[in-house]
Image (cartoon, rainbow, N blue to C red; front, side, top):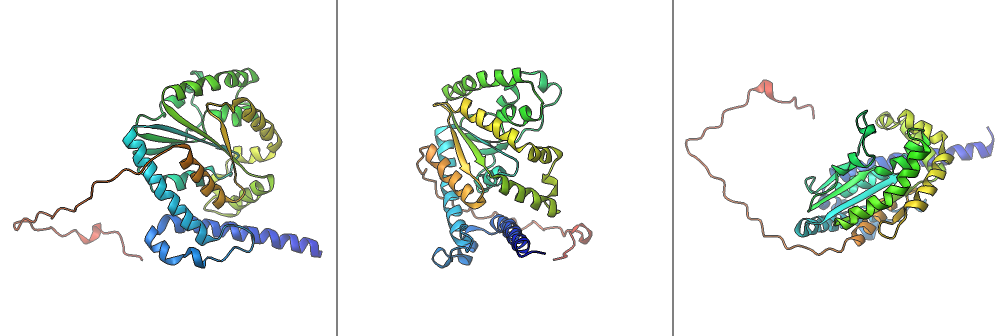
Amino acid sequence: MGEDTHSGQKRWTDRHRAEMEDSFDEELEMELDDDRLGELVDLREAPPADDGSLARGVYFKELFRLQRELVKLQDWVQHEKLKVVVLFEGRDSAGKGGAIKRITQRLNPRVCRVAALPAPNERERTQWYFQRYISHLPAGGEIVLFDRSWYNRAGVERVMGFCNEHDVDEFFRSVPEFEKMLIRSGIILVKYWFSVSDEEQELRFDMRIKDPIKQWKLSPMDLESRRRWEDYTKAKEEMLERTHIPEARWWVVPADDKKRARLNCIHHLLSQIPYQEIERTPVILPERVRNPEYEREPVPADMHVPAIY
């Protein structure tokens, strides 16, 4: 084996290791609360990463700071009865889901919800194209994050041949007017495109193939999209050109670095909606009512989940 080949394989292995560490970090974020994590990582003690990526301590500190701001934004949206729609678009494995997870992680699901629509059924295919998305739009005091949206028509549907060019042309004529209508109705609309490079997508697909926990994320459609990379590029470029309007512009998120992409996206989203902190009424825990006649019945032993851990 030549030296260049060995060196290339080592770089590839190092990237796989970094990708696996990122998966572990995701679990750490989900399991540890702010106080415990604050004790584990200190911004002043976080050394810079050797590969130029964001140091873990910096990332976690900023993530939790931004998530606290998201809670303030949520309170403001409720207080002012705002209607917020955020679209997340991008290639497969670009990191849309990871960013959405970090936005919703600390928020009230009754206020901030995710709309991830499956492929249209037979009846929906005969409806007005935008019809099935309308029922997911927010009422006053709600935030809806679309994990893919009506822009499916300009991307996957077009590239995979699920619609014809007449359908695509009609979409491009209609979508600016549709979005202007949403905005005139009082909806705040923010559109993000997560941009991932050819090499990074290949790495992430390869990681999904190797990781049994993530293999379910790879569908035949994903694999075909990899083959049609250039077709998706052309479709994306036309989509951005024809639907980037002053009333509802696109914002591109460079997403090869997942952590930076998440932080940048959340920071930018917070800047798009002017908000103020709402003072909360102090919460006082009431005394529990105790009835001297009450006797708690024991739970049968065979109803308990086995204490394996």
